[in-house]
Amino acid sequence: MVRRIWIPVTIMLLFIALRSYHIGAPLLDHSDWRQSDTASITRFYYLDGINLLRPQVLYDGPGPNYIQAEFPIGEALTAELAHVVGWSNTLLHSVAIGLSAISLIALYLLLHQEFGASVAAWGALFYALSPLAIFFGRAVQPEPAMMCFGLLALWLFSAWAHRPSGGRLLLACLAFALAILAKLPNAILGLPILFFLLRRFSWKRPGQWVWPLGLPYIPAILYTAAAGLGATGQGDFVTRILIALFTQPGWQEGTSAITAFWRHNLLAGVAGWGMALAAPLGLLVCDRRGRIWMAAWGFALLIWCVVVVSRIRQDYYLLICVPWFAATAGIAMEWLWRTKRAVLAPIASVVAVGLIVLSAVQFLPPLYRLDEGTQVLAQAMDRVCPSGPVVVGTENPALLYAAWRHGWRTSVVGARSLGAWLAEGATLVVPLGASITREGQAWLTTHARRLTDSEGSVLYVLDDCRTTTA
Image 1 (cartoon, one colour):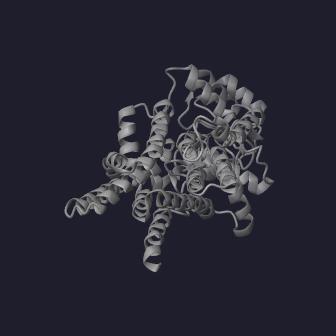
Image 2 (tube, helix red, strand yellow):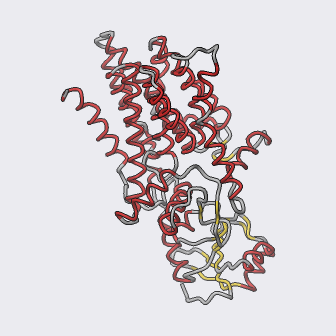
Image 3 (cartoon, one colour):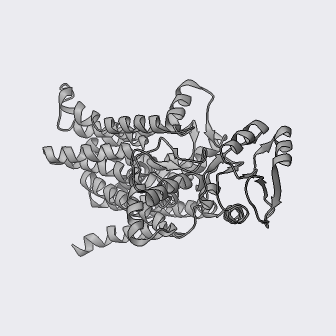
């Protein structure tokens, strides 16, 4: 028993250690804008109490700024823990790592159940080493909860398929409902789950399998709609993204170089190249029953990448692909060792793991690089004008979170908009990268005092705000 348990325990320790790097770092790294949104929701819950239906962020005005967001599982959990251990960046990252660790356990149990201990160990190791999963497995975002409940749902439906019971099926449906609530991309897991259901139910009797497959989608649909109706300003971003996806053929956000995006973020980030090379073999050699749901899972991910990720080119949208690559690569490694290919198996193992580690060494350092200038500017804002909403010339809310100030994000500063912001109580304008129109510059010259902080950033303090020199 001891010999059996040391391998998964070692992989778990490696998994946690890799994600604990920079565990106390401020949310000013590669994903600062997304983490600032999530951490804002968490901090409002910590300060004002948890209201699951009304998540709030800092941008879009003096507040409250309610948004249409994912069901805030991680945010609510972190806020409750903060009342026990205190608020800190370490806590924020630790909860993300904890949820990610549960996803590793679920993946291990799923693969152990379907393919055996060796595949489970290889799959868990690849999941632990995936460069993209290392960074976003500790990011303060909805993705750790998405991975946690998504893989729990797959494992529980597999467990039900092996030993059916009403209780197991109900638990699996609950996990799937929480998975979709945690983040809508988990909706694609309905395809592999369908094939787990069809192991025990007849395709010709839809009354048997439609309800356990369909009911888990309803809470997410209702919650997303309710959050959209309660959103203020531009906060219904899920609705706006869906409308853009299906009505604007040329719309896209994120990086514009699609080939480089797939090469860097999918092949190097998700698969670390090593998994990408092993995955086709794994899908080919796995047994027929395993191949059906694994192929369905892979096909669902392919549709996700083609329909959504090709248009929304954000790297963390690919995190959901990591377990599939890890599982299929694990199947390939187990097959090579099981068939006693004395030379090929160890060489393939060293090459696969080596490529992933090499990819991680190249892929990860830029993601951890902190934008310390944002923290300095936030401190300067507090010295110049310690209260009131501010205007920042960027779409990134990280500055608002670092200063803990309500405000507006903008890419263009014009005279009309400045007048409107002033009427709503704006106290400070920080142009950053925004363009200022000629009329806007004239307005600032008339109504604001221009200051420069120690780092060279320009701040315009509005006349109705009592100021001190930065």
